[in-house]
Amino acid sequence: MRDIAILFILLSLAWAAWLRPWLGVLGLAVFAYLNPQAYGVGFMRGFPVYQTLFVVVCLSLGWEAYRRGTLPKLHWDWRIPVFLLLWACFLFTTWQSQFPWAAWIKLSEISKLFLALLPTLLLIDTRRKFFFLIATIAISFGLVTLKGGYWAVMTGFQDRVYGPPGSHFGGNNEFAVAMAMNIPLLVLWLREAGGRRLRWTLMAMVGLSYAAVLSSWSRGGLITLAVATAFLLWSGKRRHLMLPLLLAGGVLAMTALPEKWFERMGTITTYEQDASATSRLDAWRVGLAYARAHPFTGAGFDGWIAVQPDPEHPMAWHSSYVQIVTEHGLLGLTLWSLLIFGSMLALTRLAWLAGRARAPPWAGDYAAMLRASLAAYAAGGVFLGLAYWDIPYHLIALSVLLGHLARKEAGMSARQPASP
Image 1 (cartoon, rainbow, N blue to C red):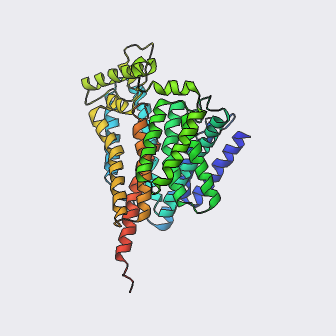
Image 2: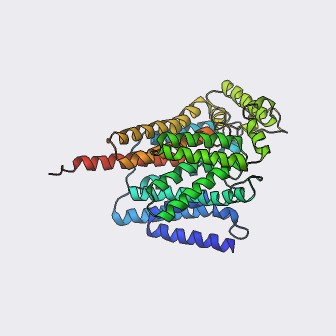
Image 3: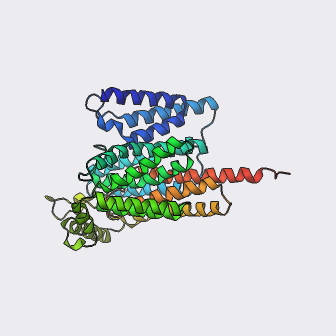
């Protein structure tokens, strides 16, 4: 039955994508973040559902362009050449890699990830479509959250929760970061929601997201959650309501969480005595030492093969920043950081402009929440190797679209004649 359901979802989304190409962009988000294909047990297990739908979207986009006689316009933004430069950097480090057989495979995966952003940039051209894409991403992660949050509450936070098997966020640590990143998107949807039932449902999903992150028993997840919450408070319009709710939730968590959970979280401040933390520091030292010795070429994708001091006991990078600089050198780290933190600065500026009536007010809300989500990723990336996740690049593409839509609406308002 699971495989039949997955096949039905694929066929339905493919049909919708053929009729309306932009709906296919939403469908791609479903397969990327809800990841229903991970639960297949028969003929659909391992089936390339995402790639199949992507092909349908491209064919539909091409047919639509042929009928209209013109292609959708790709609006220029500084992040587009940075994306291209980052890909060129990846190509160079792959060419120079000591283990090209692994690096070329990874480069192919990253190239597909970057290419998949193109339909989003071409087809999401109105505020309505933009909101639906945000909501689709939020509900896709949110449905995973419902499962994890429900399990956390029912087990009294005694057991760890995990993401969909085989996905980027299948592990408990990755799951915690992904759910923390999704909280600002749920809050954004909550601000836009009109019906009472929908608002209560979204508030419940936010609460369960907090529960799921806490029940992941992830120390990096806890720090990521704290960063996301701080940015939400910074940009929140009703801090006087949010603070009591957070305090009440904190008190509830203090009484519900087991003592072993607090012991594990306490190792954040006593990391010198924790074997897991010291192994991460060792991995960082090894990676940074290699980056200093090879600042221009790095080790290439999956460069840990070349860097490992003990191949029989391989270590993970445990940091996106160390991962990028070790595998792609200083140029790769600079371009990658520019995309993440440059986008956060651009979103901050847009929120500032909206607060001074120089940009649409709704754009300020969207900018603040996208910034909070990217900040959560930037914090989670300190402790986990998340450099090649698709969601941060998707959020950067959304920030590109948001800037264009805000400028477009502001320009239209400026051209409208004043009321008599």
